Amino acid sequence: MTYSTASEIEAAIEQLVTARTLLIALDFDGTLAPEVDDPLEARAIPAAQEQLLRMLDFADTRLALVSGRAIDSLEHVAHLGDRVLFGGSHGLEYRLDEGDSPLPMSAENTAALERLDALMHELADSAEGAWVELKPAGRALHVRMTSAEDAERLTNEAVTRVETDIPGLTTRFGKNIVEFAIHDADKGDAIKRLRDYTGADAVFFAGDDTTDEDAILVLGPNDLGVRVGDAPSAAQLRVAGTAEIAQVLAILADRREAVVSARTN
Image (cartoon, helix red, strand yellow):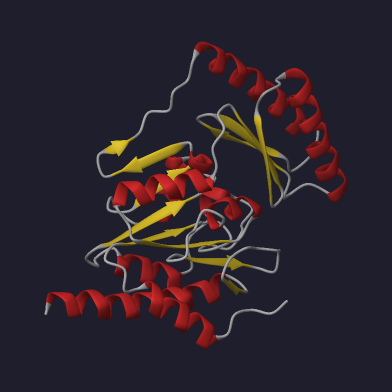
């Protein structure tokens, strides 16, 4: 796998940062923060966090985290204050400047979520290390800490039983996780909504997982997508890991700061 060179990264960023209003949107786990066994202990690496905090102060620049995490979980690990925008649960939840956007849940939705919760916990209880992440409109079965054999069994059984017992749910696969949601949305929807909300002329997005491709695929010719890792991607740039994303963010911050400073002088 060939990763983007420094000159390729710098050239792409130079073109991006001239936008009148720039939206910088980022996945969290695996992109800013290394994968850990306890998701509540995840933190962006210091080099990345430094650049995020720095860019929060830039004029005509908005920072957003777009994640599969529920908003409350994302806020807990982000430590970015109240100026960052959040798109959580794969585009189902939002925390914008005016607060949270309510998630519509009918009585039928609530009943389906209760059945899903019972099923996911039943499966998780059948294998050491498996656990269930609670989300406002879904449940995620984590198998990172199980044996490879149990991980495969649980994933397959979860998909089969949900399709049979609770048809109509949205299914997503990620790294060591299978997730089911009552409503249908993805990170591409989150990028579209955040672009509209901020009035951004250009969007920067970086992510590391299969679900991040939904965001990358809605980017336009004036935007820039970065894929972390070596999986297939439609992103313009590719880097190896969180340390490399921090380097990209440092370049982005330097170039954007120069542009917005020149406008005010």
